[in-house]
Length: 327
Ligand code: PBG
Ligand code: ZN
Image 1 (spheres, rainbow, N blue to C red):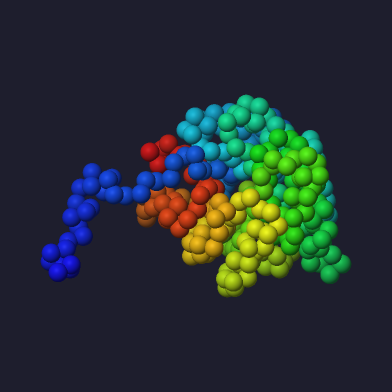
Image 2 (image 1 turned 90 degrees about the vertical axis):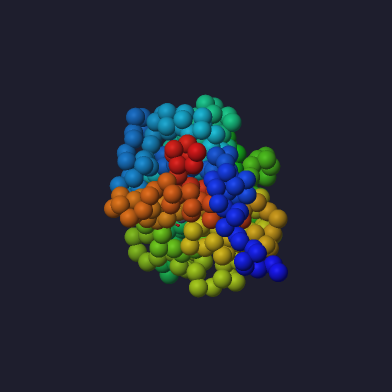
């Protein structure tokens, strides 16, 4: 009789040693990408209020902060650029400035840490005065096709700076195809596209927008980012990116969308990244600070869930504390 009392599942988890024999391990550091915020200048290290433990850094400080992260075995970084108000314009041309903070940081990081994989975020919301992810049309909406040209130029400038891969996050239709063709045209056939393929219009990006000073001045991003209430349309976003030539897909946010991650896992053999976003990060920090939960335990449990749901790559702000939190 294969049931209780002959069968007792507790036997298999009775001791720590038994659990270690049977449990899936936590994802190793090599599967993590650490998102970093870079700004122009030297010696800049500005703690981000809404994301304790994360800073806005100039390239020289980034190199310093990367030292222990690289030693811990973290796979790489995802670079975000910050622009001052003066560098912003209507279409986000600052994003493809070849002397921009991102471009400089990428070149310097690849020189100092050739073993780290460097991805760059490709979007313009930190470079437009209105804070949207592309130039606006006459009706005040984002002009999809005009955005493509800016995104393609931006991706090309990141590839030229030495990025291993570019990660378009604007959620414009056709952005992967436009970027692939620009990269190939420029001779960057080896540059990876990690598409933010299923990116939701989420309330969990708040701390990031504070970090990046990239919140839209008016309106929201619901006209281009996926709706959490339309699962099929959200999954089609990833399917279309596959057809456009994405090398790696992404689900973002991660923890609120583990079902989507698992479904996408079942639909494709492409690698999938999951972005454990700023709101998910700060939420655990805030809980721990108030004494309502143990940070290390919450981080391990939630990160394990992301891996279990099917993510290959985990984009996470915990990555710079890998040793402390995961070993
Ligand atoms: C910009 C971008 C955002 C994030 C990554 N790229 C914010 C947004 O879309 O408003 C969010 C990352 C995070 O919250 O950690 N396109
Ligand atoms: Zn954007």
